[in-house]
Image (tube, rainbow, N blue to C red; front, top):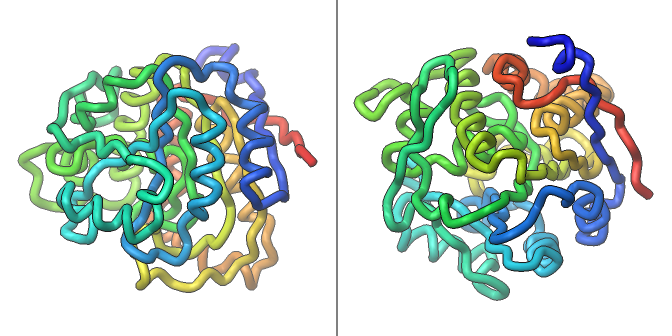
Length: 296
């Protein structure tokens, strides 16, 4: 890492206002690089998931962004979003069809994009429709994750932009031919490769919003079986720097009282989840140093 990267200090905006208005206040601070046809990358969740971002917040954000579309991809595991048809049913159950049409980016297949200087991958297959967009707003429910330890902005694009049949195999198993799910530090590095490919593709025309609310140890892919959160809600964070926003999210979570933190901390560290941050730093995707600016 050169000296300029080492010395860079990013800005991360923070609000305790857990509402649609809070989301919009922060988006106004980080939208400077967003233009053209805009993808809003959400984790829309399994049917009836209790912890996903409230749909009213999603609707408000989409309405505030001209020429924007909420985007998702199908899953590798056989759940409620494994096929496009089932995915559309899940979107209806979760309230998205009341206000929008979600673009399932791999509905028409997948296409490879390069991974420059990856740990393990040379290319990543993303949903074909991702190439139709000029910018991406990554709107993330920050929480624990069964394999990643935690799911922040990096996980949202690393897994969430990868196509359901090829790309997600590349991230989870290291290749299309893989048969074993990879865990621990290597999985964090595979996610780093994937996220870097998407960030490089959009060439800086991205911003990242993390919602620290109902932070179960389980991802929203656990649906109704997700563990009830044992820690308090914190607020919303936003930045144009993917590493800084995930680092700041971890830092705020780790300031929670020990009794509240213990379940989430155990999930993160037992999976080597903090290596996500090291992987992004290795790839020079941003800065771990940041100024936290509160927005009232």
